[in-house]
Image 1 (tube, helix red, strand yellow):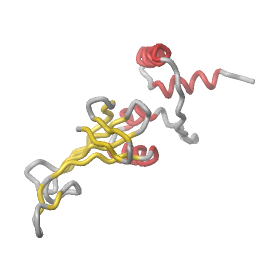
Image 2 (cartoon, rainbow, N blue to C red; image 1 turned 135 degrees about the vertical axis):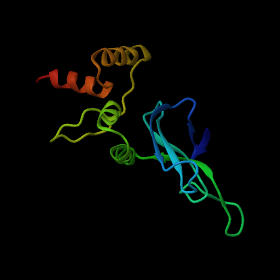
Image 3 (tube, helix red, strand yellow; image 1 turned 120 degrees about the horizontal axis):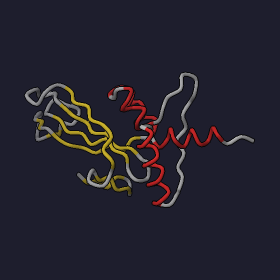
Image 4 (cartoon, rainbow, N blue to C red; image 1 turned 90 degrees about the vertical axis):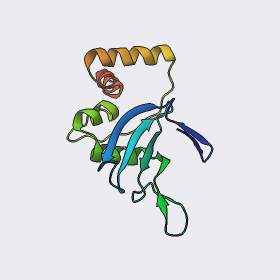
Length: 144
């Protein structure tokens, strides 16, 4: 699905799929499912669809509803909240980085070469951690 919202493009074909939440089953009019995606820019969005009694319902006339689909951009804090609610701990930390019991997280946008990013992804994958966790480890090694 592809949508332009406030001058920004959201495309499920080019974004990275993160996780899915399914509420009920398709025989229930209140059924819905949501997929969390991350754009190349680091922005998050949900692509959801649901039945005629779900939050994705669309009006089809006077007091008449049908199932629908929608893309919704998310602020980082809202993506975190969605992840905390709908992802297990391993999925959450894989996407958002390891959570320390006393530490707070801050999203930081950086620009690096494709080669450097590929190297970071490979190194993180080899160690079984997220790229965020790998960068954090490197940051802790820097001492002044």
